[in-house]
Image 1 (cartoon, rainbow, N blue to C red):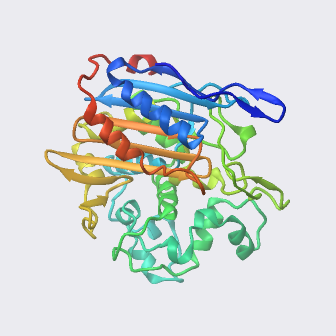
Image 2 (spheres, rainbow, N blue to C red; image 1 turned 45 degrees about the vertical axis):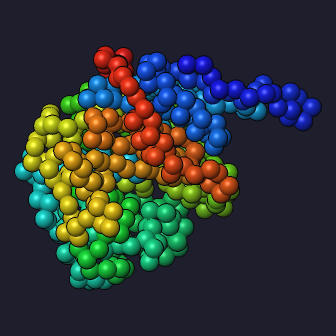
Image 3 (cartoon, rainbow, N blue to C red; image 1 turned 90 degrees about the vertical axis):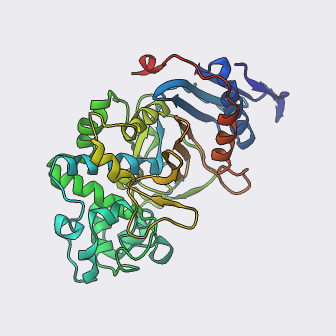
Length: 404
C-alpha cells in the first residue's frame, strides 16, 4: 500500500520534496488494484484530495482517503470519513426523501408541484402539469441549454428582481415562476437542477420540517448515517473534517455587491445555500455506499414499492443507450439486476457512485473537477469496471463497524 512518488522538483531556489500520494484507511491486498487506480488517477490529474469506498454484497470491503502533495502548499490528510461536497449525488438523497414521504402517505407523486407550493401559473399554464414525478425524472419542462441554469445565475436573477446579492432559493423560484417553460411537461428529458430545488421545498411543505432536518431524521438516521449535512459556501464556514476544494477559476462574488474576485468553489461561482436539494450535501464515500443499500432490499427507510418507484422508467421511456433517469439516479436493466449510477460536478468537486450487477457498489470523491487542459475525468467509470473484472478474491469481512 505504498505511496506513488516521483523525483524532487525545484521551486524557485527551493528544492521541493517529490510529489507523493499518501493514503489512509484499509485496502485489502486482493483489492490493491483499486488503490493503484486511485493513486494513478489522482496523480495524473493533480487532484490533491480523494476518497474511495467499495462494498461487495452489502459489506464494506475497501475504504481509503488520499492526499497528493508536491510540497508547494500544505494539504491536510484525508481519512475515509473526511467530508466532501458531493454535488449532484445530492439528488439521490432528495429523491429518497420524497419517496419516504409518499410511502408515509403524506405525498402523491402525481400531485402538481405548483399546487403543492402555491406557485402562480400565469406565466405558463403548463406549470400546473409539472408533477412530483416529472421533477424527479427531469421531464418538468426546464431546459438549461435554452434558458440557463437558474441555480447558477445569481447575479442575473438579483439584477432582474432588483434585489441585492446574495439571492435565496425564494428569489430563484420567483424568477423562474415568472418565465415560460422550455417544453411541455412530460415531453422529453432535460436535466434540471431547478426541479430538485422545488423537490426540496416540497419536502419542507409536506413534512412541516426543514429539508435538512427531515433528511437526517427520516433517511439517514435509520441507516446509522450521521456525518452528511448541507455544506456552506465559504472556506471559513467548512465543517469539521471537510476537505479544501480547488479550481483554477475565479469569479465575482455572488455573496455580496462588492465585486470581489473569489475562488470559484468559494463564492466566485455558486452558492451552496441555493444548491441544497440539488447539489448542496457534504458526505464521505463510506456514507454514500451505505446509503446505496436502500435499493438492495426493503429496509428501515424504503419498502419494496418505494424501491420500485426509485427505479421506474419515466413516461419518455429508455434512451438510445437503453438507460433512463429514475428518481435521482441513472438506471439500466441488465440480466438479473438493475444497475444504478450518478456523477456530480461543481467547481472544486467531482463525484461518482455506481451500484452494479456483480454486487459491487463504489463511491469515489475528489476535490477538483475536470478543467481545461486536464486529462478526462469521465474515464473513471470505465477504469473501475475494468478493475472490478480483475478481482479474483473478495474479502470476507465487513469494515462497516470501523466507520459507523
